Structures are given as structure tokens and as C-alpha cells.
Length: 200
Image 1: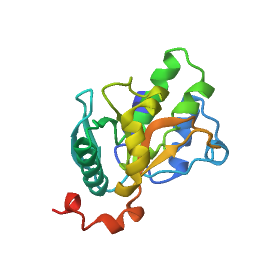
Image 2: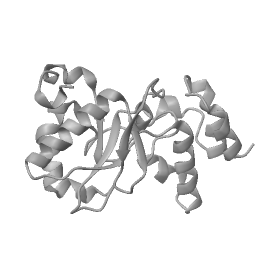
Image 3: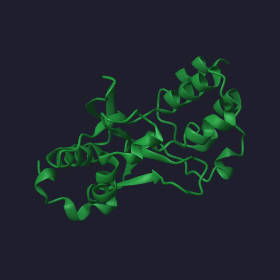
Image 4: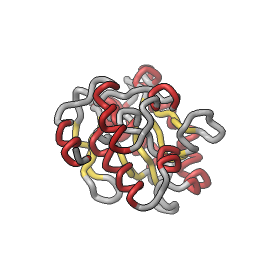
């Protein structure tokens, strides 16, 4: 079965690890990845909303709460003279599989690809709460982002809006350092819900 035909099978959200095994086999991902990667399984959310377009003018989606928090954080940064750009948001399991396939086709090894891209089913982007953030004075998805004013602002303020850096420098997980990758955690920003930015 081709990867394309397998992707067509994922017309509904993947709800269990078992559903991923045939896809893993096609991509060459070891069957024990769920236990050896140290990464949790991330089901796709039940509801997503349109979140405009990313910096490449591609349409993007987030969960309603994550979108609200992102817009509030982006606006707050702008008031401080900081431009935050959305590089990537929700990705389906099928999209993640295609992304890995393209990277492998470019000549990269599976080990190298999986150091920066989680296997299908294990990417935080599946949750609709993870975003990759950029800024005009830095190349997107490069570690140089951590030297920007935008990264310094995020380090000081992102948690106030529910966003945490998922893959910090020196982390022990399988995914390498990604200063651009932040994930919204609804439980840590409940105290901000009555702030002006969050009012309907």
C-alpha cells in the first residue's frame, strides 16, 4: 500500500497507537517508537477553528482556546514592539507522515528526521495547541531564533498566556532543541481569563 493510499484512510482523527503501526512500517519507523521515544501519543482534537494564515500565507487551524491565547499574546508582544509570526499550527497525522516522507526523500536519514520531527501520532501539532513562532529578523525554524528580541519576550511572558517551550536546550527527550516551538496549556492560564485580551 502506498503512503498516499494510507493517508486517505485517515479521514477521521486517529484515536489509538495501534492505528499507526502500518504507517510506521511504511516510513521505516520502529514499532517500539511509542515506548522508546519518550513522547506521549497526541490524538487530534475534536474541534478546530480557522486561525488565519501563517507567515507563508497557508491557512492554519488551532483549538478555540489556543487561538484566543495566541492572539492575546501576539497583541501583547506587538504593544511591546515585538513581532511574533505564526510559522505552523495544527498538523494532521496524515500531514505529519507526508512531512517525514518528504524529508526522507531529500536524502536525510530516519534518525536525523526523527530528531526534529516527531512520528505521526506523537507531534504536539496534532493537538491544535502547538505553534511554531518566528519573527522578521530570524530565519524560520532555526536555532538563531533564540538570539532575537522575540524569543527573549516569549521567555519572559509566554507562560502568562499559557504557552510553554516544549523542547528546551539540554532536554532529555528525543526531539532536539527547538526555541520556536511553543505549546498552549489551558490549565496554567485560568487566572488570566478575566484580562481584557481574553474577553469576548
